Image (cartoon, rainbow over all chains, first blue to last red):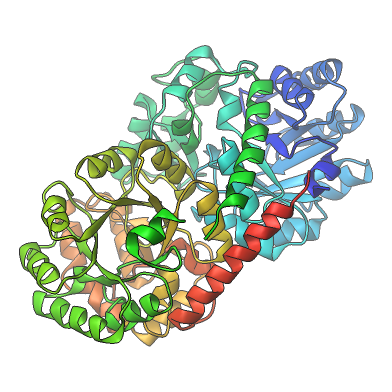
Length: 314
Length: 314
């Protein structure tokens, strides 16, 4: 009955965000096996690595899964070739122009969902022929929109602007927040932070612990002059804030950022000098659970809270 | 049945935010007459002006109304004296420590509601004896929290932290967004931007037009080194952004801000050099309606969307 479930061939409209250094085949297949949609985060994978993860995902689940493809990825044509060759059923595109690749993917029978942070790009994506939209708010971890529109303001605006299904992202970690997204007209939710700290996440254990220990105000949207990204505040992040407060230029910021910071932080567990991408909602949960436990809990609570809300009398 | 309605003696749990230069007696009495709670924005009023607005409100409505009192207001003891003498039934306190004045107000039979932006201050307010909490997210207009926590992330966190009713603020303008707040556990909503652009608002007509013309990305949280405030982007705001990008100090920022900018912008209609405080949600509505039309529409849509959500089948 739900358009997102029908479109993606999943049981619950719960989608695990494709995340650099966190969502490899272990997490992706676990989420898909639990009845949600698992997504491989191709942004941190070389072409041969992505191929390996696709093959492993297919070995470990019979259910639909997806690849998240940042459209600015340098070897994107190789990724696209692998996706088509290995018959990946669904692609989530982000960070770039969907008009170039959508038709090519759709001609192969692949469903395409595009991530946006404003209604202008939602309309462009719809014109490009995508099947659904992810509307991602300011509170989301990692890369983010320049307008800083929050999920609460963004989702109803996008739902009003397009006639394809809208999946809400940013700030969602629980049955309650999933219900709020549905109240706004979303037909699915994409959840990152909670799954980044799951048992099957490929994030380093030290980073997972840092995620569940996070409190309000522990993250900040930064590097706005390059591409805004929400980081957990650590030694490296504070260096960036300080440099930005002093009015640092783009080139100096790129130099400060350097190479491999995200891998160093999230995958190798360098909590001091690594880049730690995570959402605000990391303040709202405190357990490392399996992907199945997370999906089951969110779905159970969603149905429970929906009934509670229905029973409110005025 | 609803704790917020019972506590405040109102028909609908819809509260009009107390706003500098927008919410005088005309708006306050109109919202209260419509079945919501109208609030006088005392932050922009001298003691004799507040007294005048309280008297006019009492002349124009028999329903409960409130005064919003920023606790850092310089002549706060005079405001408190007037509030007690004129038997204002409800006070919303903000921007300061509620432990000093709450007991004094409550001893006079006045209900006290305190505005916070994190769970630490919510707990302090509860300890101070306030009757309810307003949890205000990053997307809200005007003064704002330093942690930048959005309404979607903040409200469930506060609902979990306290046992008194929580009123959601920031990003709410419609029945849908009100329903989302209730899904998160809020028992009421506080709405600013929508009422700032209402017929009865004391804002200048040119500012009202600017509010309904606003699109996504037209506002920005700024002046973070002083006290964060969300502004509509205009010539003055761009001067502030530019100065901040260059790493301006607090004193220089205060000098740039100068005196009377808010009055100049919002009350006198100087859209170029005035300070225009408004929320992100200004992108989500485009009509100047009466307070009654706004309350009626939001309540009707809230009940409609609640039934729609209930009927979703999976």
